[in-house]
Length: 546
Image 1 (cartoon, helix red, strand yellow):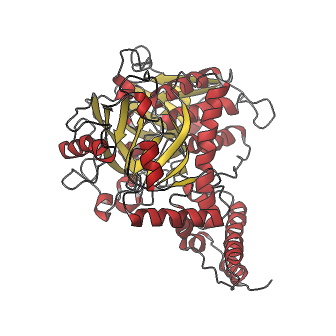
Image 2 (spheres, one colour; image 1 turned 120 degrees about the vertical axis):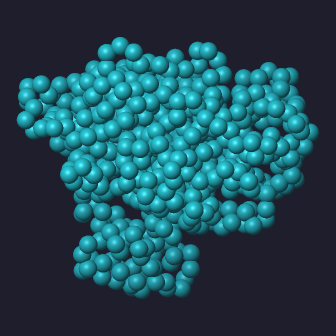
Image 3 (cartoon, helix red, strand yellow; image 1 turned 180 degrees about the horizontal axis):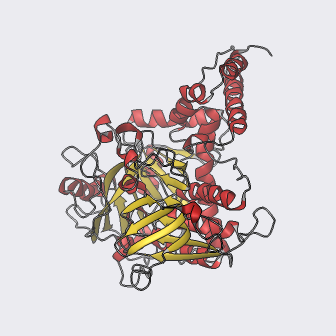
C-alpha cells in the first residue's frame, strides 16, 4: 500500500540499521486489549531448542507462513512430497513479542494492486513478469481468504470482504492511473471488477470531493491472522514439529564447525549453521531470513546502497470519526499514490462513532527521513499531518484537533524497485568465504507485504522441501521471475524469458497493426549467458514474420 522511497538518498547506507529496539511504540493490533496477543512471550522462558532442521528468524506474516507452508507440504498425501524419514523440526525465533514487527504495526489492509505499477513492471521486467506481479497478489489475497473461510476463522480475524477506493488528489495522478489501467487491460489483466468513479459519485457515496477508482479489497486484523496461521502450522502435519521462541533474538549466525562429521544417526540432515542467541546456541540445517527491514543485521551485504533493503519508518494512528458508523462505509482507502491509507474498523453499532486506522504522510516536508530501525519514537511532523488528513478529505465527518486513541510507528523494508528478494542467500559468508548453503530469504516487501509475503513464503518452503526430499520444486504460474534471487534450472529460465519476449511482441501487434521491434530488457540480456541464445531470442522478438 506504500510507495517506495522517493529519493536516491534514502537508499544510502545509514548508521541507524540494527536489530529491533526493545522499547517500541505500542500498536492497536498488538496492545489494544490485554489478551490480544496470546503468543506474545511464547517460548521466552524454559528450555531453548538447541537443534533444528529449519530455523526461521522473524515471527511476522513471512516467517509464520514459511512454517505453515512447510507443514502443509509434508501433510499432503498426493505423493507430491515424500515425508521426511524423521519428523521435521521447525523453530521460529523472534527478538521481541510475537508478530511485533511490521506485520503487527501495519495499516490492516489485504488488497491486491491489480493495475497499479503495471507500466513500471513492464518496463523493468517485461510483460510476462508484470502480469505475474499482478497474479501473485491476487493469488495471495484469495488464498488467505479461502484459508480463513475453510477454517471458519473469518470473524476471528475481523476479515472484511469489500472494496478499496483509491482517491486521486490531482489530475496528473488520475491520468497516470488510467494509463496504467489501459496497459494492464491490453495485456490481458482482468479489470472487470474495477469501477472508475467521477467526483460527484465519490462525494455522494463517501463525502470526499475527488475522483476515484474502486477495486476489490479486504481489511483484516493482521496479528490475529498470523496467530491463527501459527496454530494451523503446528497442527497441519504430524511429520512437522513447529516451535516458537519469542524474546530470543538471533544475534549472530556462523558456520557450524564440522557439519559433515556429525553422527548420521542423530540427524539425516547435517547441521551447517549455528545461531547465537542470548539464551544459547542453536544448530540447524536450513535458515530462513524473514526479518524484512532488519535483514541486514545478519546479512550485512543487504545494507549496501541501492542493492540492499532500506529500513524505513512509517506512522499510523487509530482515531474516532465525528459521525456514527452508519454515515461511513467499510471500504479501504488509499490516496496520494498509495502513500496514505485508511479504513473504518468493523464492529461498531450504527449509532457509534467508529475507529479509523490511518497511516502515511511519512514524506511530508520536515519529517525525519532516511534509514532507521527505531520504532520507539513518533515523528511529530507526521503526527500533525495525520491528525489533519481525514478532516481535510471528509469535511464534517472528522473533527479538526481530535486526538488519536493510539499512535505508533513501524519499520518497513524497501528495495530500490519495491520488489522483494525471494530464494537462496547467494553471497559468500564473510568469514572464510563459506557459501550461504541452506540459507534463504524472503524480505524487502517495501510497504506492500500483506498481499505478497504469504506467496513468497510458499516459494521458500517449496525450495527447502525440495532439498529435504531430493525432488524438484514446482514453479507456480503466479510467481514473478524477478522476485527470485536465483534460478537453478537454466532451461526453465530460458523458456520463461522466451515466452516473455514473444508475449511482448504479441501484445504490441494486437494493439497496433504496425510492426514493432521489441527491445529486450537489460535483465533479460544479462540473464542469458549464451551469446547464441541472446541472438536467437533477439531475432525472434524483432522478426516481422506473420
